[in-house]
Length: 123
Image (tube, rainbow, N blue to C red; front, side, top):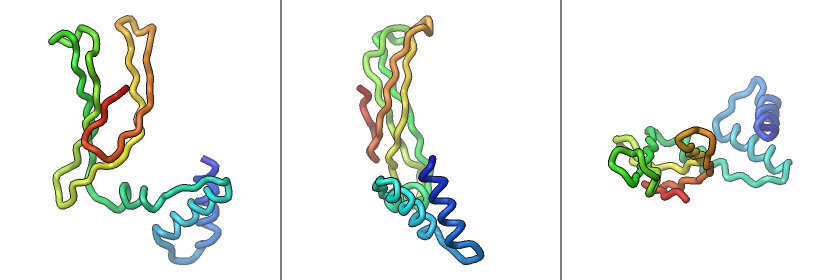
């Protein structure tokens, strides 16, 4: 959050009353990150998420030990689909998945990073 606010502050100070583009904004965020000793590849993220059209859908696929989904979870994976269009683009995601037991008094939670692939198996 501090890097974001510092990047915005730098951007507005540097380009107040001037023309600026997306590259200028990204440069200010990268500079703010470097000042905090953090290296970010924001241009790759901007290219993937801002400059590429289309919508991705993330779909959970659950396989249960019983056909009515009342048994134990046998397997779980997340499938990503890209919208139809001129460019078929799958993007990287960071998601959290939480499973609860029947009584909602126990939970199992994990974070996963989805690479730009069509599916990811969960641990």
